[in-house]
Length: 435
Image (cartoon, rainbow, N blue to C red):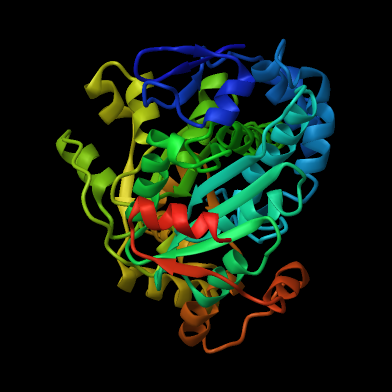
């Protein structure tokens, strides 16, 4: 399998696509083809790790990762994926819990796979250079990447997050690592962090003796493993109930959403994909008007989805040459802070469901469906993060203290350290050099 740029279709091997993050022409890497599979060939693969190894094998066959893929998957995806049945009144619905990894968010899947893959690749190089991982985060991505690369030989990590725009517990997870991880608070928004990362790659020569790599969702090495839980959960449900699954996905930068699209295109039993967004309406407005108009970010309760210019839309544009077909295929619903607040409260009081603000957007979308639409397919609501990561938002709403998972509690007890800069490239270079 080769990987190609979304702009000029420049071809690259797997290791170049993973380490470059973006193509030399500024495009994002895509598999040269999204391979079609026969889902029945996966019927006897109930174990998530074995399923993921088989599924990802079609992308990394005859690449540098082929011989190590089983070990990479076993190391990286070594935690539970739980699908909770919420069905009642002949309305099939479930909750896909993706927050059982080390940092209690779905980002652990892609970050851990990327780190394990990069480690295998540099071990095969004759004279590997030190690699600096740059990651812009609106919350969960940075902590997942920091955790995945922490103390890995040959790697340094620089985490950029918007100052004052993440929850206290998220900030603790972003800044508690030390050693080979540098945390930088940017006086600005997530889009400023993302812009700084792009500027750094465009002027990589200013970063002396460093090989820069991206670990954001634009990196194909993070995106592909996220497709596994959509394929696996939909296949398991189909085998048991004979019904396809439709997913409602909280989304900001569209990486997780595009991963679901990949699983659907491969042929797994996925029917519809609905994006749940917060008050940042770039995606819903595009689907309503046909005009793609990025804009400044609006701060919301669902802070990890506060994105005004979703990078991964470029991948959808690449796949759909015809704009009308794209508009007819995608569906998105914007959810306000008031609706998020009410949903968190009602889910807890009425359904005994504790949810984070991001998962609340997807639950709100589902609850607003008509009974007819709820009965037409199996709906699966994607739960992206553990609610205890957003205790300052969730606890006042439900009037209860949320139990913190042990793996998260251990991180909260570590010392925190970070530097604060303005969104200027020269300040970022100085911060990294002095770390």
